[in-house]
Amino acid sequence: MDKKVIVLMLDDEPIVGKRLKPAVERMGCEVEVFEDPREALQRIDEKTFDIVVTDIRMDEIDGIEVLERVKKKSPRTKVIMITGYAMMALAREAMEKGAYDFIAKPFTPEELRKAIAKAAEALGTPLQNSVTQ
Amino acid sequence: MTIIAISSDSYRMGREIGEKISKRLGYRYLDREILKEISAGSGISEEKLLKALEKTPSALGMSARDQAVYLAHIEKKVIGEFLKDNVVCHGLAAHLYVLGVSHVLKVRVLSNPEVLGKELAPGKDLSGDAMEKLIGRNENARKRWSLKAFSLDETDPSNYDMVISLNKIEINEAVKSIAEAVGYKKFKAMSYSLKCLKDEETAAEARTILFPRFPDAQVRANGPTVVVITKGMKREKQKKALIIKEMVGKIPGVNFVEVHIVNDILRQAAESLR
Picture 1 (tube, rainbow over the protein chains, first blue to last red):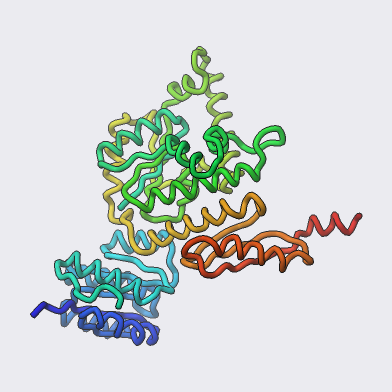
Picture 2 (spheres, rainbow over the protein chains, first blue to last red):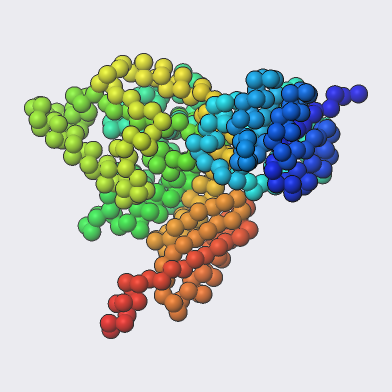
């Protein structure tokens, strides 16, 4: 049996995880959703994820800090940044610090699925159900 | 996928550097040769397109409306090429219309004053002072042109990621530095920057359609939505909005056109004085 791609999704807006989790699971990924960045970082310390999807602007801990923590712990993990405050300088900063992709909100579940499929392929674990049904 | 947009005070020097980088990186090279294709596709002569890239509109020369139309066609084609692959672009003002796209490395190349002086006044033996004045006039003309065409100062170093003076370093060193910089992670294409580029392409296409009739229109695109702001009289607002929606709505991929007509105070005042 193929190894499942393990994804952590972090966004302090509950609707984001609620809406995107089933869309990503349909791709054959195992998904864990967090709204609190501290809890997400604790989980990242315990478990190695293949892909981390994180919002950037959150209270207390921002997505750039999450990115740095993930890359320090697991350089192979692909981190996809999502934000409603997309600007060139922020996008460049995220990429410089090792983000795999950067997506501006609002985006469709399909856009995130595409980015996850690309990241999974780069990890050498292409997803079977990456194309929208 | 990365794009390098080169701007130079000397077309010859910018071209030489652009060609060398494209050869070194195996990227496609794009310059004013593409005007032939744009001319064939738009029906606008190559001469007019070139003029739009070089001359500031004037009462006796090209009108601001014509320049805006010609530049919109150039912009649309160039961005379309940028969306295809790795590209080095020079001489098409790309650094001014993809300023907010993070995977475009914008480079300004300042040529050696002696070389530039000879290029600007071929065959003339100018004194140091005369050459300095000539270069200064050329720089001011480019500044006026870019401010008029894109509301940006082409000569302002803060509009670039990298500024290289060929008075200080050799051409091959400049090529090496640019080729190295393009490998930085921050210039890597991502979903957001590709979307920005696609949005710019859509906006440019809308401008090619709107500018001949509404030259003052400001156009922005965000995915399938296009926002147009233009001036108009109160009584013509509704009609104008409908026309714009119909014109822009024909662009493939556009499913919503938002039109804002702001009061044309000058026309209103002129009419009330009649």
